[in-house]
Amino acid sequence: MTRSLSQRIRVATAVLAISLAPFDLPAHAQAPAQTSSSILPTGGGAALFDVNDVAILLLDHQTGLFQTVKDIGIAELRSNTIMLAKLATLLKIPVITTASEPGGPNGPLMPEIHGHAPHAIYVPRRGEVSAWDNADFVAAVRATGRKTLIMAGVWTSVCVMFPALDARAAGFKVYAVMDASGDPSDMASRTTLARFVQGGVVPTSTNAVLSEAHRTWNRPEAAELAKLYALAAPNYAAVIESYDKAREVAQRAAAR
Image (cartoon, rainbow, N blue to C red):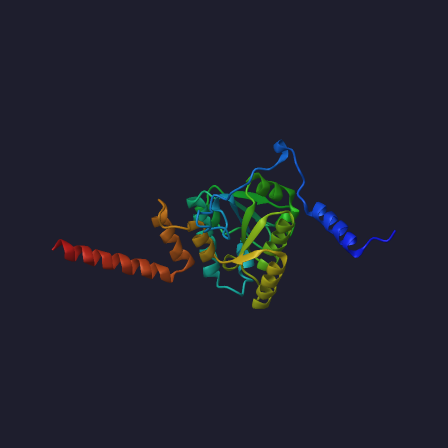
């Protein structure tokens, strides 16, 4: 018997409704709704990372590789990396560092990282180009319990991009700090940026990471955070110095 068009539409609609309906899980199996601690009642922070869910991965910041970087000045690269290390210490963010082969021509890690982030965990590799190919490294990342990874390293197109894409595939949210990373050419950096966007990795800057973690001046670490802005944006140091001097002059005038 041939069904009428209206009957066929009703059947199709019922099947579609069943396929789209949520599974009726037992109460004990339903996951509780998770609310990020960084989201305010206003909705502010919904599109930003939650600093309590962040781990910072500093990959292959090796002194030999620095000599090949052409898309950013080495002094700026090192300063931005130091800022990330200091921020991690100030806000108690886990840090993991690694190097492919520090005894070879790529050289050792820049010492400032562990100097300013003494809590950082160093994971040696056995020659793997991508840190995500090393089981110990992945285990160390998972052990933090954090699901948002902020990555930087040298080269951006290899040492950052490879683990960043694999971490995305493994279910992590990943940010790539472009100005705490470096590449052999502007072309390499531009193509890496395009691949990040295609792969769902969020490109960002040290200044943005600092501000996103900071969120408000109404916090006890405000004065120390202000000092970090001078590393991420050196001209901001002049702003602070000018303000401090103007306040000093005003206080003297008021005291007369």
